[in-house]
Image (tube, rainbow over all chains, first blue to last red; front, side, top):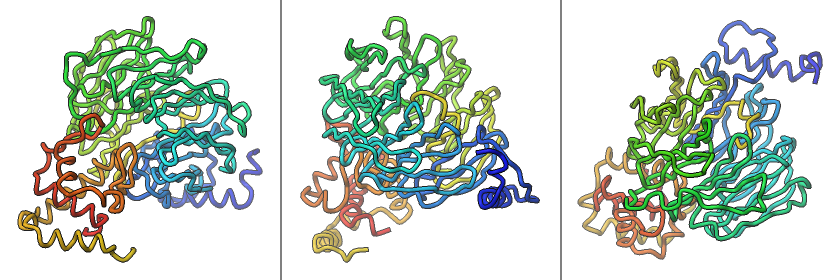
Length: 392
Length: 109
């Protein structure tokens, strides 16, 4: 749409309203981009907060998104629309500029996450109940097709070539779906890949898919360039000789920490971060940390990795230096630190402190808090630059 | 809200008659337990306890399971599944109070 069309009529009015409501100052008919925008999930209140991560402020609060425990979000290619999947099976499309819901559907009984296709036209939602993946038109949220799996689906990721890859918790499988024809997906199934895959990640170049296993010590590796070569076990028996500790929250792999020729992932049942050498796909190091890691996320410059932890250590954050593979800082910024998201260039990291009802903004160089935004029960934070990242 | 089912009323009556009531946690601790249940148990069971990676904890879905088994599951976990033991964080009386809370569909807030 050209600028003149955008400024005409209702759209311009809505945009003006948003800016008036949020800036608190004199309204200005500003036309703005969305590259510095994002959302914060309010898990208990069914809200999302639209934020500006350059000015470190809230722009709008959007209500009516249902049960947002374990919600996640992806973005349209133009970084204007966020698609949010909630626990209750809701799929909601939010317009960041207008600060409101465009469309909301209930597509399943119990849902766990979503992905957007390479071409930005297909939203894939992974469901627990009924177990499967459903595909929707990103423009209208009209259903396109469904893959029934007979298992809860975890670790969904988009991949180059209009593909999606995901794992099946109950049956121990990895499925690779080709959506070249969105109404007739084709699937290549990999069975007997291990007990209880709990999440997956795709490397930022889309080359490898890695699924973590809960039911045994190890990870599964699938070369997305050569799926015909099958799934291979890596880091088999990494916990051997160390009885597993209780896991009070499942770790997450999505959000990856690939930095140079290494990938860092949470160990399961061990208070360690595992470092995988991507030349040999063997364990390069293991880094002792403060608890069961949940998210292990690299700063965009790949010099640091920030880690948060499961209950009861969820008030702690640790920073790992990737030159030395050691913890260089331990922070106690608040209660129930659920998620963190780096700004696109990595100068800030936004952190949700659920039980303090706050979002904390850290300067990643000084590791000092430079801003605080009030938000009820904040959880996932998703910035719009995810629109252009494979697997996010 | 639906009218309380006969089963829930039965559970309520059983709870009221049980000696566990004498050891019920105080209001502040009850609030903490509900927070723990919704937020931290909710990580797997869902904030609304309808299930996720963990099973549903809705009254109808736990109706066939004895209180003692539920209490033991909370305290000691279920070996061979991801359900961990919560004994370090709550007492048996508190686990029993939570079971009563679940039986009533979490409506005694």
